[in-house]
Amino acid sequence: MKINGYEIKPDASLLYADLQDANLYEANLRGADLLYANLQGANLERAYLLRAGLRGVNLEGASLLFANLKGTNLRNADLKDADLQGVILKEAYLGDANLQKTNLRHANLRGASLYSANLQGANLQGANLRHADLQGANLHKANLQDTDLRHANLRDADLEGAVLSPCSRFIHELLGAKNLNKSFVKVDGVIKAYY
Image 1 (spheres, rainbow, N blue to C red):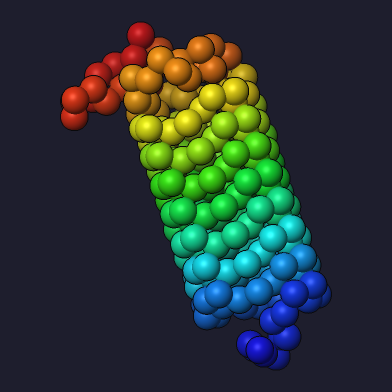
Image 2 (image 1 turned 90 degrees about the vertical axis):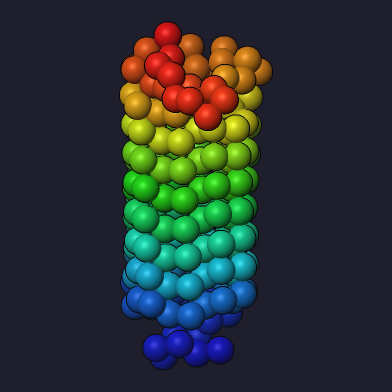
């Protein structure tokens, strides 16, 4: 398949490619190199991007519903306002990525590295973040309801204004986080301050 003159296939070399608003529904880009590519507003729903190189890629406003990005390198990627509901980002590297206001509901981020990532205002409701590295991450006003944070590293993560579930199975994981006393817990539909 060719889009904008670019061959869309596994292991493709798409460095700096301009695929803005492209329809890549169910595209197989396994192992593709999309370094600094422009995929702003693209449709990558159910796309297969296993171990693809997406460092510095622009995915602002893109739709990646139920896409498979296991083991993908998304360092410094811009995913602001992207829809990643149900996406598989297991063992992916998202260090320094911009995930502001991103929808990550029910996403699988188990073992992912989100070191210093910006998740301000992100929706992580029901996401799996077991064993994830969120050290220094900005989770300001993020929705963490029903999020599995068991064994996650939250040292120096900023949780100011974050909404948490009253779930004792992961409360001990939050001990190294910053601004925990300024976050909120939703109990029976009512948001309460966390102390």
